[in-house]
Image (cartoon, rainbow, N blue to C red; front, side):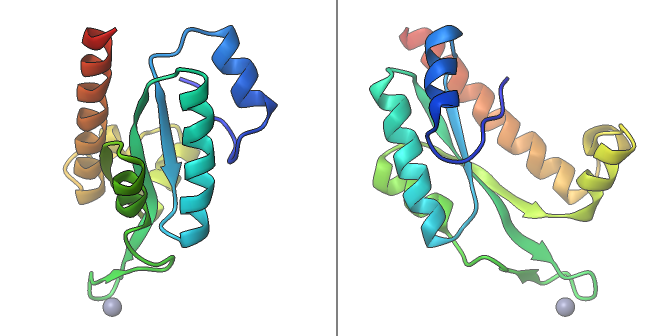
Length: 141
Ligand SMILES: [Zn+2]
């Protein structure tokens, strides 16, 4: 797995030509401007004939620590909107949550540290959606 910076720089092009890729996943925030960036990125990978596995929306919302209501800091639904517009699968919404960040700092991923937490179950669901897409693309190839 390679994590690329936003946009469509030389890094994406070089990587796609140098390494056989199972596919590309676009991770974006919900804002309108992110939809435009995701569109450019997807079109670059399409040009390179890299399968598009789907879109994941990150920082979708924050669960209020006081009342657990979702707070949509960066708007709502950009990832789903982009997936519909670009006709690629939507793989899920990942909330802002301090726990995975803390787990990363101490080397204990949330799925090991707190496997029963709501955010761990969201990560499992998104990973499962992605694994399904990789299987479908592998069969189609
Ligand atoms: Zn609240």
